[in-house]
Length: 103
Image 1 (cartoon, rainbow, N blue to C red):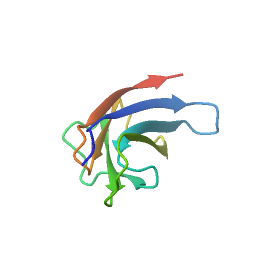
Image 2 (image 1 turned 135 degrees about the vertical axis):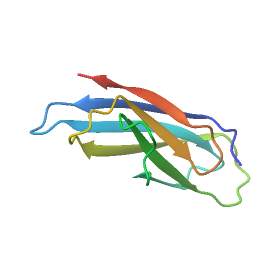
Image 3 (image 1 turned 120 degrees about the vertical axis):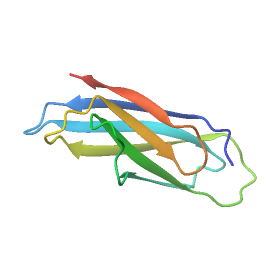
Image 4 (image 1 turned 30 degrees about the horizontal axis):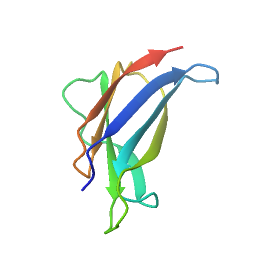
């Protein structure tokens, strides 16, 4: 298990042809070579303005402890105007929630 430390940030990048939601974060894991994948949760929750992401940490036995590993996720904005992003971690780290910054 990890020390259950995590963080997430989100903003909307309006510099391209279409607005892009960009999410980045970190989760504390045992070793720096653990694989981290991010996908939209299915089904989403009851609040349509909150995007829920499942952050999966592929863990294996390791002697090292306390490494912060980054992750990221991007999505072209559609009809839903998200207000927050919630990252749910497969390794037992607490959910991390971020309000989406608008530039």
